[in-house]
Picture 1 (cartoon, each protein chain N blue to C red):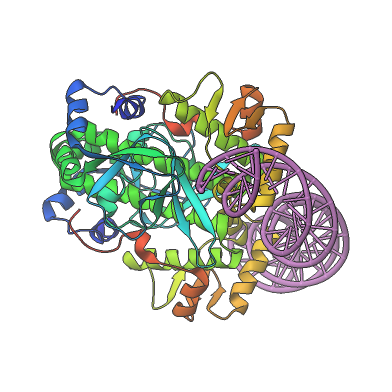
Picture 2: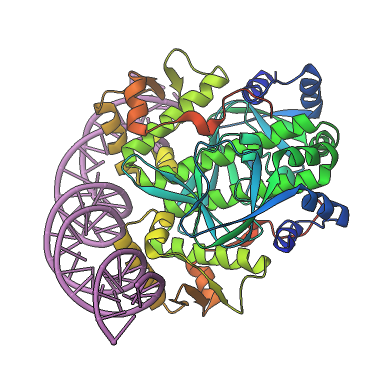
Length: 239
Length: 239
DNA sequence: ATCAAATGTTAATGCCCGTCAACTTCCGAC
DNA sequence: GTCGGAAGTTGACGGGCATTAACATTTGAT
C-alpha cells in the first residue's frame, strides 16, 4: 500500500520496520480524485497531509489575469502538501492531473512522529528539502535555460523520479499532461509549447505520443538538459 | 548576537529561552566574507550550516554557457544552507552580495536538537519550508508575471522580510545589488533589466538610487506585484 | 587629484515567443 | 457510426527581450 512512499523516503536513507509502522499508523482515510479536481484548495488550512498512492498531481497558483503556473509535479510516493503540516495555510492549490488515488496522514500523528521519532522526522523534513531543491532547479530552468533545454530537463527529472517509485518501463513513462498544461509548467503559450515539443521530437532524443514519453538517447537528452541528478539526493546515506 | 535569528524564527511561533539557549549553543565560529566571495561552494559537503548575522547573500547556479541564475536572496537571520544539514551535498553555491558577517552551526549540534527538542526542530524545519514557499513564488513570477510585476514582487518580498529582522527604515531598505546581479535574479539581460527598473521608477511607486529602495506607494506597489504575503507565514501560531 | 575599472544608460537590430486565427485530429457520448 | 468538444498543429504578425555597441557616470585605487 505505502510501497511508493517507502521507496521514495528509502532512496535517501534506510528506514526501519518500526518507522514504516509509524508511517502506516499515521494514515487514515483513502480517497480518489478525478482529473481536474482540486485535491487541496488554495487558502485552506488542512488538518492532514496527502500522500499520492497513484496518479499525477501538481501544485499551482493562478494570477488575476487568469494565468496559471504550476510550481511542481507530484508523483506516487510524494506528499503533495507535507509543508502544510507546519505552514498551516495553503498559499496555492493542488490539482489532480490524472485520476489520483491518495491517502491522508493526520497532522496530529505527524506531530507525534516529530515528538518521538527523530530519524523519521529528519527523513520527512528531507522530503520537503528535496522539494525545495527541485524548485531551485525549476527557477534555473525558467531563468537561464533555452526552452528546449528546460523541457529536456523536465523529462530527465520526471524519468528519474518515476524510476525511483517503479513507474517507468524501460526508457518510457506515462505523462498524462496536455500541451496546455505543459505550457503552464514551463511558463509558455500553448502555441510555443507545441513548437518546443516539436523541436525536442525533431532532435531525435525522445518520442512523445499518446501521453507516453520514450527516451531514445539518454546521454544526448542529458546533454541538452545539462541534467545533473545531484539535487535529487538519491544517494543512500545516514541522515 | 542571534537577535535576527530569534526574530526570524519567532515570527512564526513563540520560542522559549531554553530554545534560544539551544540555538546559541549550536553556534561555533564566526566569520566574515567579502563581497563576491563564496560562502559555500557548489559540490561541497559542509559539516555546519551558516547563519547570516549581517549582510546579503544569494544561492546560485551557473550553466555551461556561463549564465548564472540566483535562486534565492538571503538576509540577516537566514540560514543560507540549513538544507545541507540533511541534503548533505551542496548542489549550488552561495555567494556574498555584500560584506557578510556569519556564524556557523555544527550539524552534530543541529542533529542533537532534532533528537531532543521537537518544537525547535519543527521551527527549523518550518524555516526551510518558508524557503520553499518563496521559491514557488519566484517560479510563478518567472513564468507568468510581467517583468515589471516580477520586480515589484521582489521589492515587496524583500521589504517585508527585512522588516521582520528590523533592517528597514520607514519605507526604505538597502539593496546592494548591481543591475547585472538583479538580472541574474529575474533571468533577464542586463540591458533589459535596466529598462524594467526604469519602468518601475517611472511608474512612481518607488525611488531607487544609491542601492537604496524607497517605497513611495505601498498600496500601488502591492497591486502591480499582486503581492500577497500569506506565503511568508508571518502569522504567529502553534507549530 | 587622476586614472582605470565597474556600473549604469541609451540606441539599433534581430530573434524568440505571445496572440490571433484557421484547420486538423483525436476521443468520448450517444 | 455520427457528432461535438477537446487537444494538437500550423501560419501570420507584432511585441518583448537578447545582443551588440557606444557612451556616460560612478567608484575605487594610487
